[in-house]
Length: 466
Image (cartoon, rainbow, N blue to C red; front, top):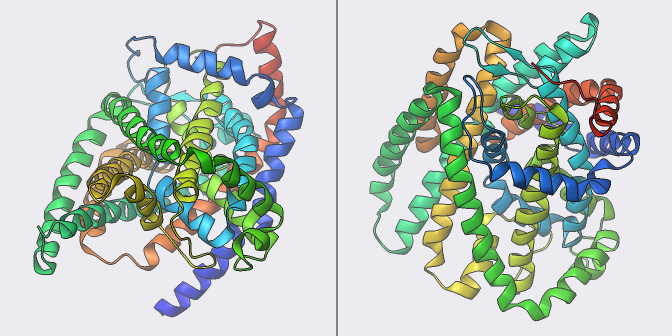
């Protein structure tokens, strides 16, 4: 039975994250870019000015809302995760250096997709019974499209609930326990027998922390993410930049391999990666999986922002993709490619490849840093996806289901800490991809609304949201 489930899931997963779906995601991003006259490029300086300027403004949000900075931190908390460390390494190993180029292309188009998602989420959001702002794909489908499209909203929410327990929680907790165990093993502070007990303790502690944060409401979530995300991102960026500076002389060669490898991967990998489409697929899927542009999940957090201008909040979507993929994922790629650590092209690889790049410069002590970084990345993802799952379950069953869901979501941390997850990751990844379908249909159908709102915004006639 398990083998049959694995076989079915593998077939669906290969399609969802394969060429057809990849073309759809790129196609919608290109379509939106053309309709907005490549807003993400034309208005990129403006987007940086708006977002950075609002981040520096210290102010309290109204009841049931987040500040714009807390909203983007909550969204980044879910996207900046272990995938930025392990996922990029895997893309380079299987797709060659050229995968990085296609990752950039997916991010460039994804900026416009995410801008559109965030703008629509704020424009079509609602207040729930507790007075909190609620929004996201299910709400812009419900409030923006005709009734015969509303089934898409329920489909998105159902896939979202099924996804969060695996992608957002169990696999992330498993990453935390693995990182801690590895660091302790390196210093001979942990035995194989003691690992099981330690992991159980870690799982229980994490379950308690997750419950305290989520049950504390949207305000507490925002307060945690606005402190955790900048800390972990800056710490990782500084050490990654250090590796690049040490190997600054190899930068031209690395960028040359990225560009050449995008169109002729065999020339760069010695034939280990010979397929142009494999390089493209790995780069694009890595970019999409990292920044979530097209999944619609990030817009759920942005819908909570205390703002009355949807388009202005939409520029945070551009900023978010830029930071996640163009900055952090690119730095990870440079750590691997500049440091000269051996890459087994054509074979699977993960965080250990990135860690090797760091240790080649900083030495063995960096394993402590990577353990801390991986824990921060994973924990922030758990909190961000906890919010997404809560909004999805609330849309399906009402706000009365929120607290039971939060408690169940918290307890899953113990499962993630103590069990071999195996098939769970693959199934969760499949449901994650399935969320793309209803969301992209809605964004495509509502593209005219986005175009009008952008025009009205720059003409000074934008309608403010309630």
